[in-house]
Image 1 (tube, rainbow, N blue to C red):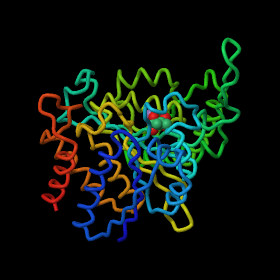
Image 2 (cartoon, rainbow, N blue to C red; image 1 turned 135 degrees about the vertical axis):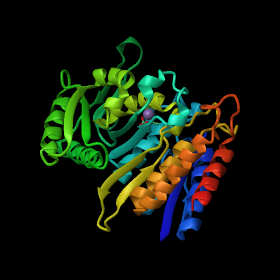
Image 3 (cartoon, helix red, strand yellow; image 1 turned 90 degrees about the vertical axis):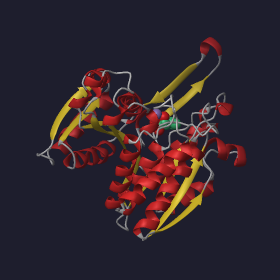
Length: 363
Ligand code: IPM
Ligand code: MN
């Protein structure tokens, strides 16, 4: 099989972690007899510096034709004072929209060998295995009108939260289908005691649930959910929520895993005419400018994202399972970067090499 992947390293630690993920994809390709064909493109601060735009037209066009897109991270303090349209983050938001990847899947699990690395008690964290399904191309991030107007005490700003029935329905279907492959429970998170968007959200989720009678559904307010996530994370299977709530809850959930550096994500769009879905894969951690260039970044989130890429964009479930097992073996062996093992940290490249070695051993 030809694995055609556009790699967008981006900013900060993005280039270092995507390099390890590509290394792992290459190892998989060699072991399983596929041909990996990667090309690199510009996004974020790197693209702003080179072209003046956070998402150059060339990157946008290539992302739409690539089999899958693997992204590192965007964001750089050098652009902090610029308006939203000239910031690195805009490149990622525009890319998600251009690719139409409306469902962002963020699995979070507590790895047994990492017990003790979370600041939460082991008894709370043990057994955590949840999947956040975050709506990714709507809500406050994209709603119009938006803007910051005026100066001084007369200044005003506006953002708009807006959802259509269809936008909620398609992401809800992904969550229910995901629950079917897991423990069969969906928790839909909203703020329906205050927001009309959330009242619509609840109504649509109820409608979709009618098509999935085998799946259990509960609704939870987002403030309660923020508390339940650290009180009793084991109660969650699939957590379905809108864009902004999902952004916030997924960083919170990272604490359950021990480090945000471990978290992978897959962003999926509609099934195209060729039968495939658009797919954008990125670790959940950001660009971490303070860590960049020091060989200290944890590549496991990026490598896990590469596993998701194999699974969802190329239908290579067996290969994806193998990468995930190799990640587990490396974690069990204690080959970990400083975020998880400050006493004897492994370098970024050593973790990538260890995952490749574990893959070869298992083959
Ligand atoms: C994420 C990030 C992005 C988001 C930023 C970089 C725009 O925080 O993927 O969670 O808010 O979606
Ligand atoms: Mn975030």
